[in-house]
Length: 86
Image (tube, rainbow, N blue to C red):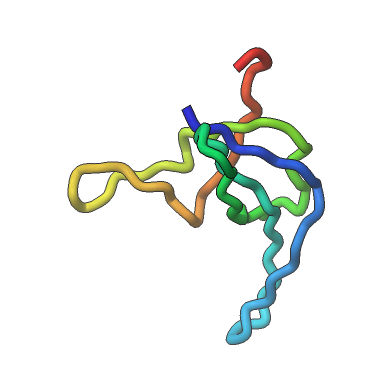
């Protein structure tokens, strides 16, 4: 099962050029057991960063698509801490 790695609590500000709206994001990486984790950013709407550690996607991060499958909902992604020992 893939794991989400959070190494740093550093937040990055991103400004929408059209609206001027500022959003915060944090760098993470998916570790699916390969040679190298795949980095990505996750939005942090509360302004409180995720602590360093191992996470999984929250169930609310998924949605049904038009083909009957599931997708990650990029607008509602959230992380939940993995239980120790996983």
